Amino acid sequence: MLFAVGEDLHAVATARLRRVDQRYTSGRRVLVEALVEAGRPVTTAELVASRRELPQSTTYRNLAVLEQAGVVRRVLGTDELARFEVAEDLTGHHHHLVCVSCGAVEDFEPPRRVEQTLADAVGRLRTRTGFRAEAHRLDLLGTCGSCAE
Ligand SMILES: [Zn+2]
Ligand SMILES: [Zn+2]
Image 1: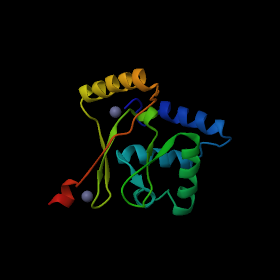
Image 2 (image 1 turned 120 degrees about the horizontal axis):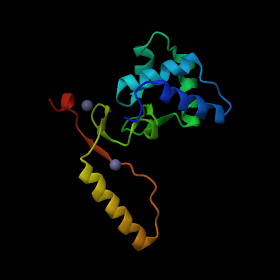
Image 3 (image 1 turned 90 degrees about the vertical axis):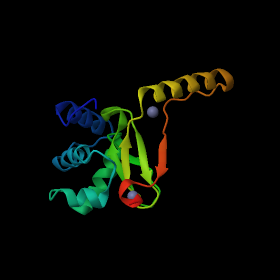
Image 4 (image 1 turned 180 degrees about the horizontal axis):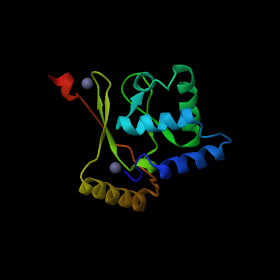
């Protein structure tokens, strides 16, 4: 992680919200802290259940604003539930493990050498096809520990 839940993260969030004419209200701050604490992509329902200061009505709206500002991003799973995490450029590059049975999503950091192999392949791809990759997403789909039991 580049930032712990500290003033750096909150300063960046404040600046990004300002760019879209929004304020970093105390409710939004609590939301960002809850997302960092969760340590994995979480649903709106999980967020609301995690903190008394997060009423459902404003949490939906605040997540949309934070997403628009680039502070929070939506993570694709295998079910219809939206899951959210703090934007990757604020927390560090990682991948996801997605359970096709219960829909749970966990963060996953592959060994450095996997990232390097991928970067090399992307470089060759550019030489061959002219495609300029800016980022990548790599999710592993499977069955989580609790569902496999
Ligand atoms: Zn599962
Ligand atoms: Zn990667």
